[in-house]
Length: 171
Image 1 (cartoon, rainbow, N blue to C red):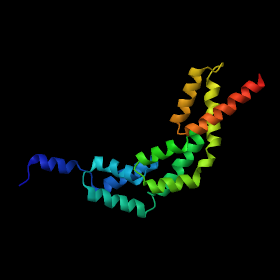
Image 2: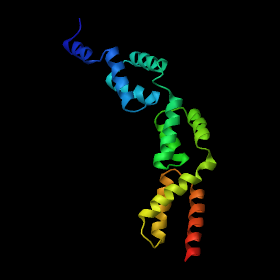
Image 3: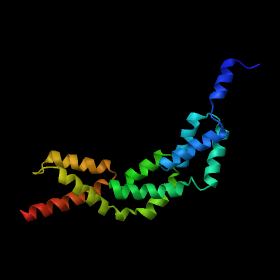
């Protein structure tokens, strides 16, 4: 015999079809990597087998693809956010993507030698919000801002030196 609390908890669990529809709705709002969607579905349905079946069904239909997610995520972070490689890599790994896949896609879409353009763009944007003159405190804030955006410290230092030399030459 089953207790009334067991019957109630079973009745509250979504059916496989409801869970599939829920996953499709989530995917229409934004793309998800497989692990992230799996975690989201497991919050609604603790049955791992059902969740795995839904994930496989979505993969087979072409709705879930970690490689495509990785590519689009990298492009959006380069174009919209002006992030460095380290920041993008960190964000992708926290989303549960395979580190090897992340490295491959980053190397294809954002080679290490291509960071100068986004670094200069991020530097220009931040400099436009800092009123002159540039003192040590502002320089430190600028450096830390660019580090948080995922640019390598040495590249930031070189670009700041180049930039400060240009400004002093103009004076």
